[in-house]
Length: 471
Ligand SMILES: Cc1cc2nc3c(=O)[nH]c(=O)nc-3n(C[C@H](O)[C@H](O)[C@H](O)COP(=O)(O)OP(=O)(O)OC[C@H]3O[C@@H](n4cnc5c(N)ncnc54)[C@H](O)[C@@H]3O)c2cc1C
Image 1 (cartoon, helix red, strand yellow):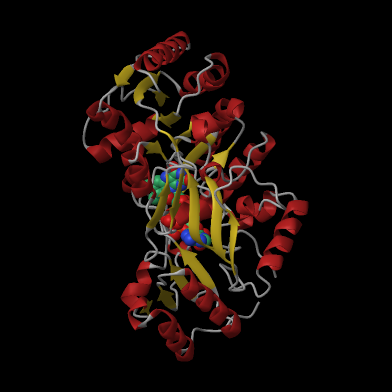
Image 2: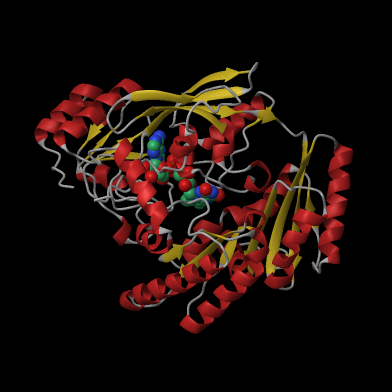
């Protein structure tokens, strides 16, 4: 597809739509919108203009203009993505949703919250809590990521083992299509099989099929009691082997089962500049439990604690107040930042395998790391089979790093596909994993995805260069 540059005539029309202050063209401002959280200059690209609309009608006008001028548009939330999804890889306009940040409605009769896409996930969680409800979507980036970005990536996170990923909580979306048409998909109905499930198709489409402008979120009753167990194990194999037993044997579904290996424990410890208990352990598990009564919580904690002891854990630390909960969660929460300090250039992967395969896959990753002389700390959501294997560049020179990274990723992907896994569990494909997806996904599915993209976006205006090449 041949795209045009953003001309001064296009800038003038954008200014007409949103007002001059909401169109940015100076280099310093554009730089902020040239990357997301994927490290490395290869994942940066300067936009030609950034536009900050305040409502759906303005977005529709911008998209119509982009179609007539043949200029690509990249939607952007908070830019916390880990797949270079919001990076304008072909230049053009970045459409930032940051000004659309209102909570529109709390519907207490139907248990829904209706929001604009630029509200942070943390604000939604807090508002729900204040009202006595739970919004169960909880990516580790909740404090900064936008709900629109969570929808576009179908974000997972710590609570997905119990509550599922973002898609589980979304029943309706207002969307501006790549043609500029506006439509409302679903809404507040709990059931809906009226035609294809376009809500689910839009969720996780990474801004390639439409711009999400309004979101209908389901609220749940808030569990009144929770506590967290920090469970160190001597080695990762013993730790991870317990997960399938825990999931099937205890009859309890924890809210979270997170793991980190010893390289991660050490990295978090250095970053926080404080000693983490059992810092020599091969692995740490964080298991969170929720219940509606205190008695139920105690019973569940005892059952889970006994299961851990029977399966070889070294110790159990209990967090049951704000201070101890924070102490246990903090090292896990800072992991991404701490690994960046350990090695400013790194490659965080997001592989996902059936839960029972995690021990074997981690063993294979350890073998691949050893054979290729590279450190690959692993952490993630053990209850979902989602492993963030993170390749560290450390002191490798650039060409060795790129050569090693590509080789190691290929070896890891081959392994996970042989175990029935997938490239990404929650971060998405974006630009970062596009080539790998083309290589590993069934060509029949690639054909279907291309056909869907063309049906939604005949001029290939919206977020081109992501997920899949269409032309
Ligand atoms: C420290 C840290 C921890 C993280 N933890 C998790 C985690 O636990 N689980 C998880 O899943 N992810 C996690 N992430 C990744 C990231 O936060 C999520 O992918 C998040 O959903 C991205 O939201 P965002 O608003 O930053 O979107 P952006 O990065 O701005 O955009 C992401 C994608 O969504 C598209 N998009 C954004 N808004 C819209 C919209 N309104 N309409 C259409 N398309 C849109 C963009 O084009 C892009 O393709 C983490 C990231 C960091 C830095």
